[in-house]
Image 1 (cartoon, rainbow, N blue to C red):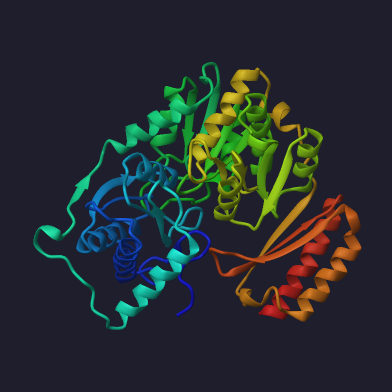
Image 2 (image 1 turned 60 degrees about the vertical axis):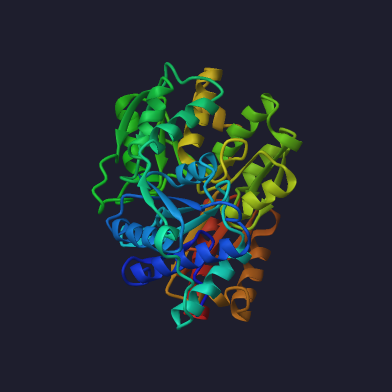
Amino acid sequence: MGRLFGTDGVRGIANADLTAELALGLSVAAAHVLGEVGTFEGHRPTAVVGRDPRASGEFLEAAVVAGLASAGVDVLRVGVLPTPAVAYLTGALGADIGVMLSASHNAMPDNGVKFFARGGHKLADELEDRIETVYEQHRTGAPWARPTGAGVGRINDYAEGFDRYVAHLIGVLPNRLDGLKVVLDEAHGAAARVSPEAFARAGAEVVTIGAAPDGLNINDGCGSTHLELLRAAVVEHGADLGIAHDGDADRCLAVDAAGEEIDGDQILAVLALAMRDAGQLRKATVVGTVMSNLGFKIAMEREGIELVQTAVGDRYVLESMKAEGYALGGEQSGHVIVLDHATTGDGTLTGMMLAARVAATGRTLADLAGVMERLPQVLINVPDVDKSRVDTSPELAAAVAEAEQELGATGRVLLRQSGTEPLVRVMVEAADIDQARAVAGRLADVVKSALG
């Protein structure tokens, strides 16, 4: 069996790759593994389970809840809430495990299962590996140890989760948002209720788009992967800024008053300076990934802030932050982690903190984001190839070496396999956009021929 867990849980086409049986089995296995390592010792275990609005989330939630309860875990079902809300509630309620059903920015037919450990932190790789092993053992015939009678888990809805999470968001803001007009694109996803409520309670005038999830329209032409609607809405409504989330609202991209995109690197730059000025940027360091724009690194160096870069994936950003005690990190894609207030990327919190900086300074978002100049960066996703060979193909290695020689010191090349989708990502950065496009196109062609 190939590894089920990617960089962000287990994902696949719901009811094809990710079946009810798999969701149930993984949940039982997770309960057994966490029990074996002592997580449940001395008390009756509790889990928090949430989901995004995908239609498939309804039956997958039922499977996960059934699996956990059958393994003796009491379940608090919080319904449709963002991934960071489930992580927060797992910690705030003292739960032993959290489970989120979502495929984030992926199209509606996909879904995923993501587990959180006590405190709302992502499971360590070794625990995920152990869950896979135990799941496979029992899938092929080894019997489960099953509780009976009063030992089975009890299931309750926890409707208070919505207000508790919104109150948390407002409580950690450095200042209110009075006087700001904000357009929110909720991607017809998990934050469709939470984000508008939080911004409004914090004092902003709120306009919403993409906030009518029907189970089928999540991420459909809207949200952080499709900014066209948000850009137009911000200009139409004369808003100060726009905020776009993905399906599970663990990421945030922004749009300034002129409708120009503000990406994750720029958001990190703005927040890094805000936290530095407030004395909250520990070790004068921000954590990014190898995908961070070179312009971001240059801007941080100019401001006396060190940039630490990790592998792509917010779990690796978080690992670096926790290991070294850093306060801020994130990805160009909009996953931003403010570790004092969240254990994972939180799109609503990020958007509110960005808006708070605009409100506090009286400067426009465009002016604030101007602290860094984005160097041209081209990203091409190459599907339907053997992504496992991206680091071992001699043909590909030769093409990359040739491209790096052509770009010289003014650019760079990065090829990597996606952790959540069956494709290879080709990224080229250069001082000239036409050169970046040409080099990226050639490399994408080599990826197709060498790995196809």
